[in-house]
Amino acid sequence: MGFYITLGLLLSLLVAVFAVQNATTVNIRFLAWEFKGISLAIVVLGSAAGGALIVFIFGVGRQIRQALRVHELSSENIRLTQRLSRVEEQRAKSSSVEKKEDGVSS
Image (cartoon, rainbow, N blue to C red; front, side):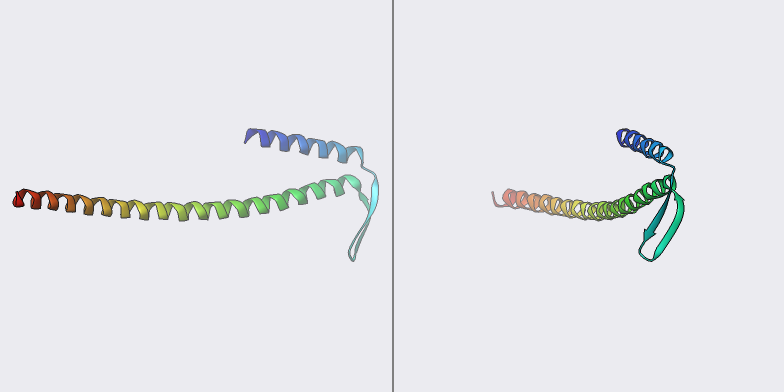
């Protein structure tokens, strides 16, 4: 986990240095919108922030799916443990009944 945080901070620093070194103004056209005279640094930082937001949203979705799966598997584990206990109890009862029957018939 620490490796990914360090890597993320390093990449963030590199993006910030790139943005500061390329602070010229540019014109941006996207679909029907046009922005004139915007600093390239703002465009780069905004793009990086947008990418980070998209990765965050997908990461949260993945964590939610994993949490639901863990809950589902935990419930199944509890159900199977209870079933195993019942089977073991039945086996113990039938084993003791067989021993009593063997003792009576001898």
